[in-house]
Image 1: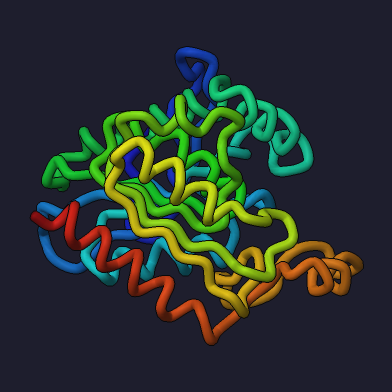
Image 2: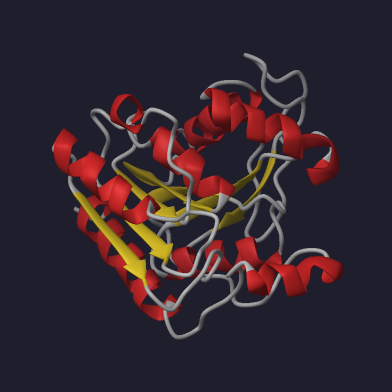
Length: 246
C-alpha cells in the first residue's frame, strides 16, 4: 500500500500480488507524537469502510495505536465486492485474505511501529478477525463476528482474544457461549462477553444501512446501544494495552 497521510484514503499500487485487489485502499489514523506506536489492523462491517469505521479508527489512534482500516471493497465498492468478500470469509481464503495480509505487511513495514500488531473487526470484519487470530497478530478484538465453520481448527494457536456480542442479536444466537467454550478447550487466552440488552452492531454510534431496511434491522436487534458500548470499548482498549503496549 502507498503511504497515506493523516486521515487520508490510501491508494495501493496497481497489480496486487497473490490474488488481491488491484488498488488496495484504506484509512490511516495516526496517534499524536513521533512514535513508535503499536499497530492495529481494522476490518469494517458488511456495509464497507464508512464514517463509522473512520471514527472507530480515530478512537484507537487517540488511545495510541497506529490504526489502518483497510477497505476490502477497494475494487468496486460493496455492490460489486460484498458477495466475493463473504465467500472469501466462508472459505477462509481468497482476495480478502490477500488484501488483509498486504495491509498487515504495510503496517509492519511502516517504520513507525513497535513490532506489536493487533487486529479488530466488526460484524463481517469480526469474522475475519477471528480467522486472523492465529496469523501472526499479538492480540485480536472480535465484535459480533460470525464463528468459523470449524472453530476448533480455525482458532488453534490463536493470539489472546477479546470478544463482544449482543444478547439481543438474532443473527448470532449463542455465539458468545460457543466461542468461549472453544477457546477454553483450546487453552487460548480470552475474554468473551455477551451484553444482554445489546444487539448486533451495538458499537456503532449511528444507525447504518438502507433507510428502507432500518425498521427491519431494529426488529432483528441490529443497531447502536449506547448503554453497552462504553464498557465494550473499554474492554477492547484494556485488551490491546495489555498485549500491545508491553
